[in-house]
Image 1 (cartoon, one colour):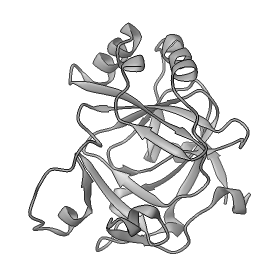
Image 2 (tube, rainbow, N blue to C red; image 1 turned 90 degrees about the vertical axis):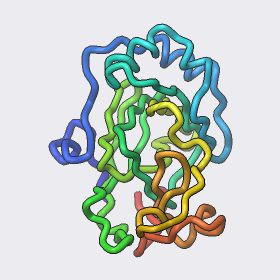
Image 3 (cartoon, one colour; image 1 turned 180 degrees about the vertical axis):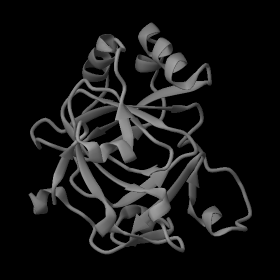
Image 4 (tube, helix red, strand yellow; image 1 turned 120 degrees about the horizontal axis):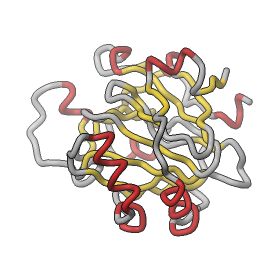
Length: 211
């Protein structure tokens, strides 16, 4: 599987690099105050990050004053497993290089997406990225198993928290997995086993076996 760079023209359909922002204290906090589990862990909001003046300034800038949460997704991972999307852009920042597996929301047909449409992008350490709301994404993948990944995740406050109680009416309602989180799972994933909508067809991409 070809791994593109986020500086390649192909990335412009999925997101963009956020330039001109100072995020050094946020990177330091992410590296020193968040764990690196053997598997993958996600915390929607962590006060070690969200309390930083630098984070608050960044949030005000990129979300224009909306309430923002700063959390993290850390650990070790090489598989696709699922793809999700939100109604808003997501901002990411890693302490190490990491890989994003991405697709487009408009490539979903009848609630299904062929994983052959997924593209891989290397995100350099210390570079802030905006992942557009129309971009399907999920947990990062590591570039180096010894280092794993620590990735800050900034989203509108409340995203990825408890799923609202709704009566499914539309097909998209069946994809709702948490607050502001619509999920397509691969049949091999733990999420599918937990009841998530199985919407990914084709191979469950594994960066480790393909590179």
